[in-house]
Image (cartoon, rainbow, N blue to C red):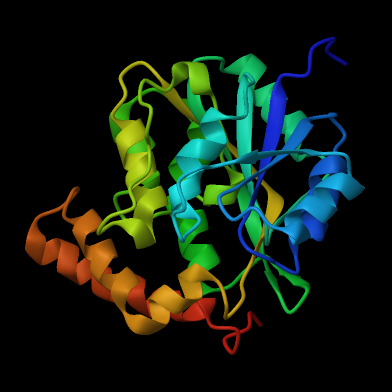
Length: 273
């Protein structure tokens, strides 16, 4: 075990999620003893009570964003460590997550992000295969073979056909990020993470590193921002703008049509068989 702990989880808390305590417990129950803090722009008694229960520091974003994506840059930049993971309040992390992230960093210290495969949590059950997950596994296959790459072309292999990088699985290497802000909150708010990975993929000489094991669970709930955006159609419109960054307009529209259909698996009624 290292003398210095080089990985921090910033548990991003928003309002009063009933799953926040589960997320905190999962990041505290790691084989590698990561540091854990809570980050929020909606400081409240609920969050403070949980922080006190687990003796965790709370860092408060003074900018009230009204959405999680607005807190992402605040979170990774306040982790104050070599490696920082933004742990989403609704999600959970397997015990080996931190250890394998740190091991990957030691192998590839020029990484700008290190990310893992993931599973979904639907009605408290783990789901490893459905339409959308299988599409993402297919898109991630080149990175599974490469493991780590500094090539812009291969970094974007997980982005140009759709966003295959699961945001809460990502560990940031702050010293390798040349920007103060990675994410966007404007017209790209629904795909702010996709835009962020696109922006980071353009940084020369810095690698994307992929761990092809599902080391964390992303919760699918009707109340999440993603589910609401899919229902009202705003996410589909924003995804089209992202496709246009990689493809001609006619082909971007074609891709967006098929990707939008795959998003139906985000509906809780469409359970994996």
